[in-house]
Length: 295
Image (cartoon, rainbow, N blue to C red; front, side, top):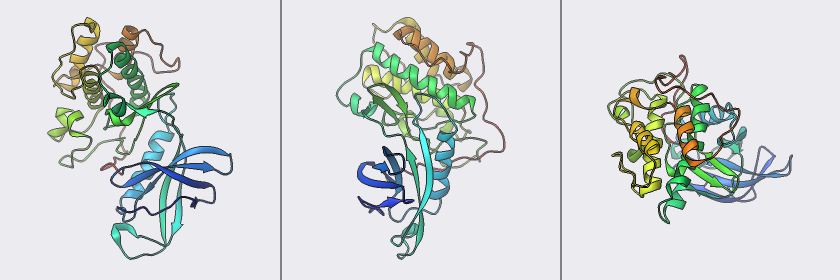
C-alpha cells in the first residue's frame, strides 16, 4: 500500500515528518520532530487505502499504551488526525480525510528479532530481557490490558533497557467468541486457537516461546532448553508453555524468577510479585478489543 504522507509533511502543525523507520501491512512509523518541544519522536501513520476500522484501532492503541507507566513500555505522547486530500479509506477516490496518527517515544536500538537473526543468546541475557518484558506485562495486566502479540519483533533493545512495542491489538475486556485469531501464529497460546477469550495467561505463553527462541534459536512451544540453563529457569519456561492457562505463572512471578536467575533488578514501582498459586487476573468488564494489527 502506498504512503499517504511524505517527508516534510506536518501533522497537526506540530510534527514534521523526516523519514520512515519501518512499515507493516497497514501503517508506517516515521521519524519526526516535535516542533513545539523541539525533540525527536516516532509517529505511526496509516498507508493509503487504510480500512475504516483503522482509526478506532489506532486510537485504542494510543489509549492502551498511554494509560500505562512503566520503563519497559514505549511511551505514547499524543494522538491526532491530519487533514489530507489524497487516498480515502478502503481505496476510495481522493477526498479530504482525517488521517489518524499516534506520536510515540523515539527509540534507539534494534528489535529482539533483529538480534536473534544473528544467533541465539546466552541464557543469562535471554532471561534478563524476558524478565523486563514480564515486568512490563505485569503492569499491563494489573491495568486489565492483555498485549496479545508478544514476539521478538515487538521487543526492542535499547542502550538503556528493553521496551515492549505495539499495543495495536491490545485487549481490554470480554471478546466475542468465534472471532478471528489474533497475534503471530508461532507465539499464539493454544486456547486462543480454539476460540477462547484472551487472558494474561496467553501473553505468558507467548513470552515462554520468546524465551525458548532466544536461547535455542527456535520459536517452538515444546520446552527444550540447553543443559546449562538453571533448573528454575527451565521449570519456569515449561510452566509458561503449559497447555492449561491456569497452570502458567503470573507475569509478576515470571519477572521475579527470571530477574533473580539473571541477577538483574526490576523497576521498584512494579506490581508486587504474585504467589505461585495466584490465578492470573481477569480483564475488567465493559471494555473493548482490537480486531487485528494495524501495522
